[in-house]
Picture 1 (cartoon, helix red, strand yellow):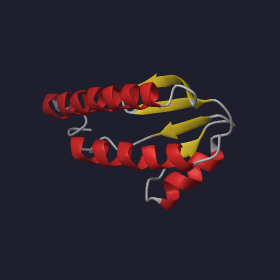
Picture 2 (cartoon, one colour):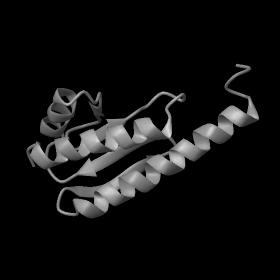
Picture 3 (spheres, one colour):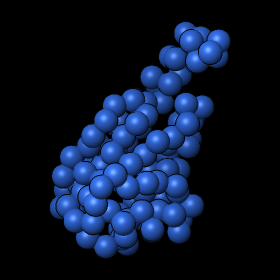
Length: 104
């Protein structure tokens, strides 16, 4: 609890959350025919997709990115609080690979 309530740790989580939000907004803008909406806030995020999310989930897994689905048409991202900006960049690159080759 001490670590999670540390103001510096919380500031870091907010900064990385903002980085993730901006990256997801760019991703959504690049795939307007596939991403209907972004959901969630902070590090708990979802991509509401047009069509099934399972093929994209499988492609992400194939590229080493662990994502889940929430229902049939949402990709769920739940990174750990200790995530760094570099991890966000890597995750978005792998999510792009999943979006580019996943079904839809």
